Image 1: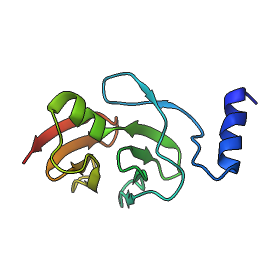
Image 2 (image 1 turned 30 degrees about the horizontal axis):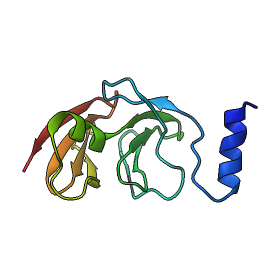
Image 3 (image 1 turned 120 degrees about the vertical axis):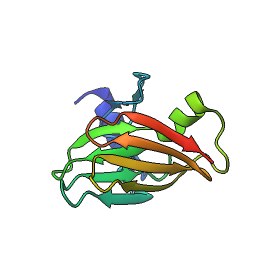
Image 4 (image 1 turned 90 degrees about the horizontal axis):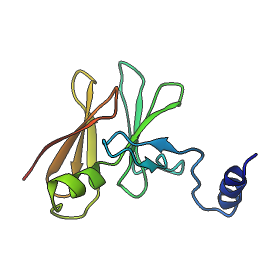
Length: 132
């Protein structure tokens, strides 16, 4: 076991949220970020066709997609993407709602009072949709 694994276990045993792995975000920045926390997510939705599970973490800033076997596919940070590339967010800078489109190919995320971003369910690529 590496030092990082031991540290994660120690943090978890102390009652704090620990991240079991680090994966690359799909926001084009190439930065490494932790997956959504394994604690109780703010919101979870399931694609009825594929069984994919989308979770918004407790901070309401990170979205994680898992396949039906609970294997992490990607992690996205829509709040950070909007702030970095599309200006300030009206209202609280956090995810308010998520939903799949009818075909299950995109996940629509509402951030703040009215900013919208689509996440490609397959790749995790983010596409800003606009803001009120």
